[in-house]
Image 1 (cartoon, helix red, strand yellow):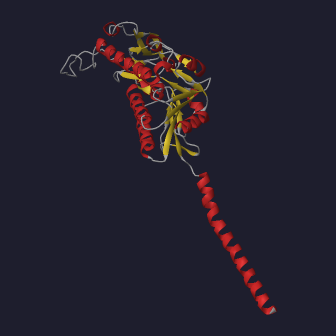
Image 2: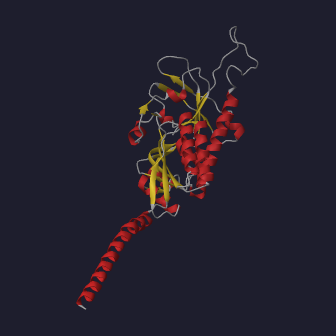
Length: 343
């Protein structure tokens, strides 16, 4: 009788231990799954930087990064971080179109570190929200261009047309300059809508503003840093738990004209360059730049200012006279003009 009782007790104890062991094993298996489920990311906020002057390489890299953002199913929002004063007009337009295209697919929020001036501001204009620091630089909505050279046919070079050597006359040049200005201003108004507190004529003056002034005049939405922009982008994408990933091209050299932007940027492989990198030397043909006039280096002397009169009609605008952007040391003068005036 006692043996039967002890045998039954041993079976019960063995079964209990077995259940405990099974419970521990199941717990160890299920707990990580439950933890992972609780901490799983809802998606990714991608950071796309704009560092240094904008040229063809910058636009190509920006295009690649924006395409990655649009094609990656894990990326739910983009934060564009700017430390740039613009550059090539054509390259800036390419980047603007990429931002606009991405903003049609997902929330895009911009964060201005050192600057988003001229072509860089053009790039971030389609962002749903723009953050800037009080000391950030924004604006300079305008175009600067070096005029075609006045060259005459000679015994060495033959031409098939009167403008083949120069690329066009002054009237034609200012017509192009005016069309670029109108496109830039129109894009800002289309993107910012009634948030802009500046008239088109005021915006076309190409003035540079601080981040705080940008909030007042509608070029910027809120004062905040990169983290504020990331959190806003995640909120716009309805992400409660998210990862942050920076997209940056490998091996690219980032060229800065502004020391302020150079110091603010955390980009690798960065270097300072002279304004001539973008403007070119005399004889290199007309160059259209979306950069602040204040970025013109000290080795160049801006003696006079030929500007497009933003209050005039289009026909009157292209009749504006050209100024002179000449090298202070040597070389023939390179005539230049700005659409929107000097900031």
